Length: 223
Ligand SMILES: *Cc1c(COP(=O)(O)O)cnc(C)c1O
Image (tube, rainbow, N blue to C red):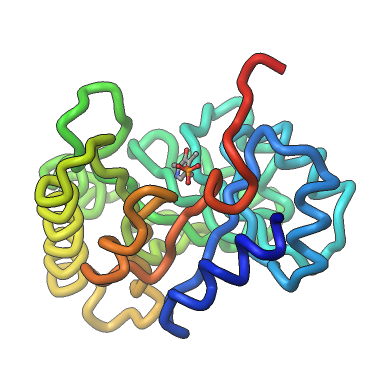
């Protein structure tokens, strides 16, 4: 079913939106099936799992890291990661920069914002983001590139609430673009939308949607 699911989702997405196939917890054989159906962008949220899958699968896959990243795990993904969606502190960004420098890479990153009502979700608020972007430390970081923002909406059936949160993230994107990245074309990504809410996210301007269970089926965290 993976191929059918992928094709169905792709049909509904505008050309300008990139589908990140979120393959966390799924076996390499599932990713290979998606790859054979033409999928090249995969999202994972555990560093070691992503490293192992990277080693096992074709080298032209683009690996997006979408989960909370612990600083002691950065080293496992820096050699090959395409985009880190989940920069949620100045310390993490600094640590990514340091590791990227060792590998002589410039690593693309998104700033993750807290837009949901739930308290548990990671992310910056506007004040923290401004502090980071205004800091002298940030200006010295030569081995990272900020390419946009990411957020997760509240897990709810209330479509109006979800839409409101995506609109909020789009406003954050527009504000940061105007205030910090007006002359930087790489700042263009708005990562929002998952299996249950990606159509709304696309309507609200998403450029990257992160879809897992709609492609690979429900996850089983007990195995
Ligand atoms: C798991 C996950 C997704 C995908 O979730 P689905 O509901 O399975 O589509 C998207 N984004 C993040 C950050 C995730 O952790």
